[in-house]
Image 1: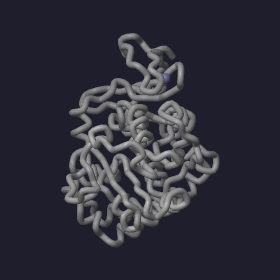
Image 2: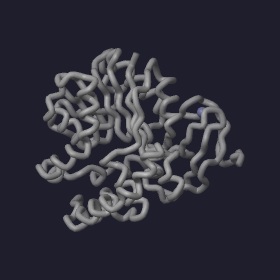
Image 3: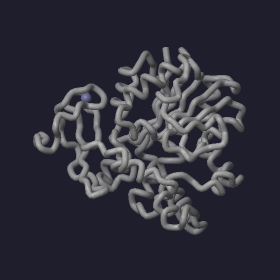
Length: 308
Ligand SMILES: [Zn+2]
């Protein structure tokens, strides 16, 4: 279907700059009295949200309930649980860089991943424009461009569920590859719009997350955005995250259990019975998400790229 001219006034594609689209999903969501649709570039097949939400709407979205409260972050039980869920990523990192390697987490959020990497012995840094202000100098509130890191500053860069939020993911990746050492690795995770989860849930697929998610990747467009940004080679793609995959399935059925929604309802807290129900449902969902993962149509894409 061709876009009506009134619906789309020449927004250049965020990946290739072309300005002709097809509608991928009409009336995908309404937020702040605005309607959004999802469009697909006719040249490079990149999928994005139209129109782009303004910065004020996004600021409202990343309020203090977006991140976990400090008491939850410090709980030893939650630290162990988080450590278990990201074990495979730590293992991949140790295959490629030394335990003393310098890592930057782009879009560090509440800093949980950076703290964990530091406990493992890495020199980890985090940066995020919407993070909670931190007393530690290694969690920077800012953007990659404002931080002005030197060329080849890091052995590895991690970037989990960030690229889908950015107005200009290509420019951000170019900057990330500039500050990554040659031979360094970048691990990126984004939702997979070519997943069976999206085919099943469509507008109710939780990782659509409109208006916060403005870009939607497939394995092909993720590879393409990296290859356009710099000299990289793809080491591996995977389609399962112990932290995200079961949660995306459960929240597509029951959006009321989304941690941000629950924290908004209970003054920043996540009551024990909610947490228990949420985790139990995630366990129950596992058999339903395995076929998609095996068919490489899981709800996330995690790419491991090496800078040449
Ligand atoms: Zn394009």
